[in-house]
Structures are given as C-alpha cells and as structure tokens.
Image (cartoon, rainbow, N blue to C red; front, side):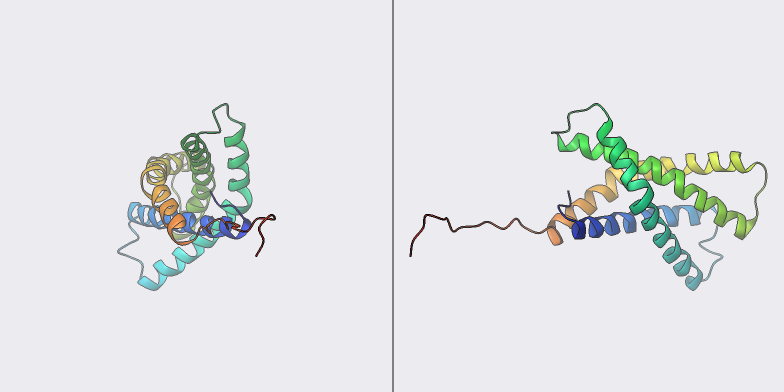
Length: 166
C-alpha cells in the first residue's frame, strides 16, 4: 500500500503503534501489572516496547514476512489475498519475536517458574489469539483507512501534453 520509503516508514509506525497498544495493554493485564505499576512505569515500558517492536518489524520480521507472503501460491492480483498473506506472516513473526521480549521482561520483573520453553509456548499462544484477530479485524483496517485518508499522497496527474500549444 505505501508507494515510497517515506510512506512505508509512516505506515509501519502507524501499524506498529496500533498493535503495540493492543498487545502491550493485553499483556500488562494478563500479568496483573496495570494496577501495580505507576503511570510513569507504564509509559516508559510502552515507549521501550514500541521502539523494540518497530525495530524488529522494520529490520527482521517485515522484510522476511513480505518475502514469505509473496512466495506463497495465491493470486497476487487480488489485494485482499495480499493483505491476508502479509498480515498472517507479520503476525506470526512479530508474535514469535515479541514473545521473547515479553518473556525476558517478565523474567526481570517477576522471575519465572518452570521451563523457559513451556513459558515461551504459553506466551506465544496467549499472544497469537489476540494479535491475529486484532490485526485482521481492528488495527489493520483502521490503519489502512487512516493512512489513505491522511498520509497517502495522491498521484500527480500531468494535464499538459507534449502536443498542446498556447
């Protein structure tokens, strides 16, 4: 949907911000931290999570997800299929990566009981059941709407022709 590098960065920031909002507060709620952390702690954790998520999306997951999505056998001329394939690959990649970040954060704040692998698996499952519907039904459509309405540059139409004379 973005047609140049600047638009790509803005679109990525918008999408990342929306998904971090949903997933950050979901995970804070799951871990019982919304009522125990001060507002300043929540805001600093949100900022750190946003920066990490944007960097992971921009440099690791985004390029890999787009490559994976476009290598799948589907009709790429249908934009809905492209959106679904790309969104699915992005959600899977981001959940796998950001669950590592969440697990590390949780270990630092609360410690960890049991196997790290089992905790990671539970974290991935808990995150994917919220991230995938949020991406497909809420954040993705909202960001695409806002992006087209406020960011996407209209193509420049050249009304002059080489054969016109004044």
